[in-house]
Length: 366
Image (cartoon, rainbow, N blue to C red; front, side, top):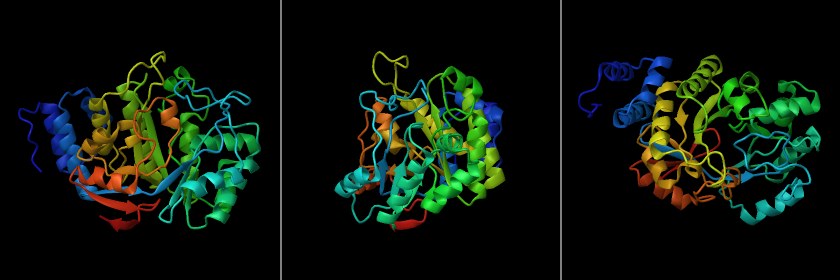
């Protein structure tokens, strides 16, 4: 591939050479890329790496998001999904209640339940285990992707069990993989400033390490666009890269932009398309040992997601049915998309749509 941008400065030319030669980028390289205004060169480099790793295939899954409870002990500054027990809008549902919702929206091609929610201290750990078991018994052919590493840390405190014991109980009940949230920015300065009242950076990473040791392949995220520095974003990626070198357990990285809840919120603006595309591209360049970078259409919007597919992304998530967490915070995108809409989105970017399962096994190529 030839970089078409004219008059590259010396530092960018060095990075271009590194990428062409398959050399790993440093922290200094990553920070430089964030500071550069040469978005097209960064995008071309990321596209080169993605084509090398994944060809023109872009993956999606038939998935349904489920939320059993929005009651949460944490009061994270960026979250508008959570409620206190007894507060208007708070809910904690039974498996039977969820069956009704699922049966109204499910179809034979559904492959995954994507479950996350509040850290509800008013129920026991058995509540969470039991609904995983109930779902698996009723829908045995659907993969259960449930709970963030931060939720696992919460379950450990709730139950008195170790992370591995918590994970094993969920595995025995029918869990197959974890969701990627709760990482936010892996910086204690950020977490203190943003009131992230859940797992520390090290605890989040330790849960992931334990999950990988049990054979659970997982997802990693980054919630960016508020108070974090560019250096903290790169440090976040490097911590994931280091753990991936150790365990090889991450399947995909998802950089999610923060959504402002309303005009009165302290966060006034959506992350720019420029920053979203640059972050997708830099993620692809820095995380050379994670196979996929996901452009999450819920946060990015449909058209920016399409462009992201030539900036290093190889996944657009899936059908979802009804997303609640980002929309509670003000996301403007659709709450879900049909299979046909996802295929249109991917083909519109001159990419090849591939339906996958939860572990990137290919089901159908369109």
